[in-house]
Image 1 (cartoon, rainbow, N blue to C red):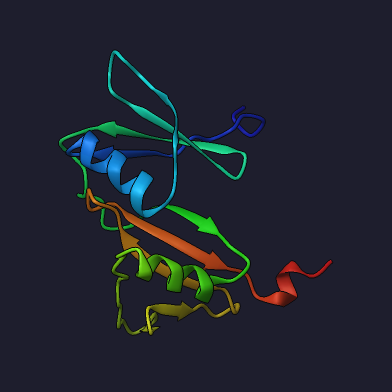
Image 2 (image 1 turned 135 degrees about the vertical axis):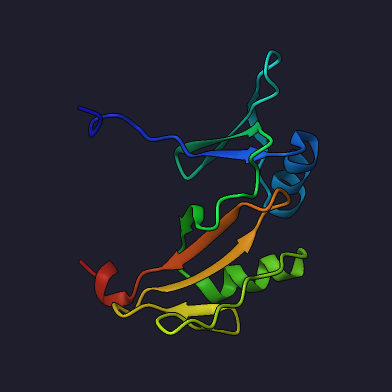
Amino acid sequence: MLSNHAIVPALPAGDIDRAEAFYRDVLGFEPVEVSELTGEVTYESGGAIFIVYASAGAGTNQATAAAWRVPDLRAVVSALRERGVVFEEYDFETLKTVDSIAVMPDGTQVAWFKDSEGNILGIDQLPSSMTES
């Protein structure tokens, strides 16, 4: 029923102005729409959209809320660090980051950071064997 329709990630923000500044100044997004009624901000990313909306529940999710797939994870991590992004470091039995990057069993590399509202965002890079056609 829903498989033929686009999914739109929705990220909560405790302070919508602070979140808008983070997505603009740190991540480089420009709003494509701002709702005058709710203040909800819509962004475009690689042909898809996501929204940031005001919510008291911002930052309470302890899992990845949204992620971007990139061709060169290390370059993106480096560029975001230069813009002040602090990456999460994990050391679990089944997952460990080294210099902020975890390598999954299938070879996918992943890094995580929090936005200004505490939402956990991810960036991943598929192994070359998964991207070759």
